[in-house]
Structure formats: C-alpha cells, structure tokens
Length: 73
Image (cartoon, rainbow, N blue to C red):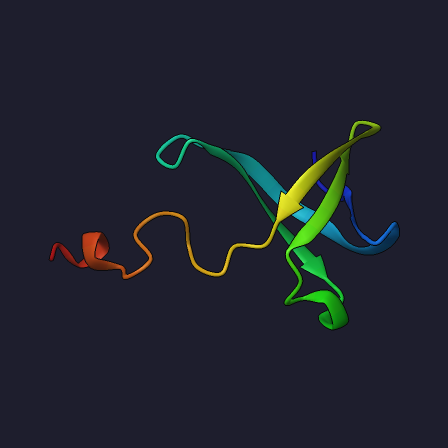
C-alpha cells in the first residue's frame, strides 16, 4: 500500500515507499527509507495491514546485479 512503518528493535526507523512481488526472483520486494543509523543492519520488521513481517536489507540487486543482461553481454 505504501507508507508502512519499518521497525528495528521495536522502534520505527523508516517507511516503505513501494513494494511488489518480484516474479523473476520469486520474492516480495519493497523499497524503504530508513534512518542512516540503522541503514547497514539486516533484520527489520515491516507492519503491513496490522501484521508484522520480517524483512532483510539486500546488499545488491536480486536480479542481474552486474547489469550484464541489460547490456546484452
């Protein structure tokens, strides 16, 4: 829906800006702004329609991280 709160250690540290299911990578994906003090952490929780869901920060894009498919390589 957007604007879902992102929690870290039971504190709101950010907000989801968008999300969808990534069919190529077979996982739910969301983009969020989080406070810079926790930006490198991994274990977050997102509240969606009143239910809490675990969330992890991805260190690199889940699909074609090198960009080779985009370049036709």
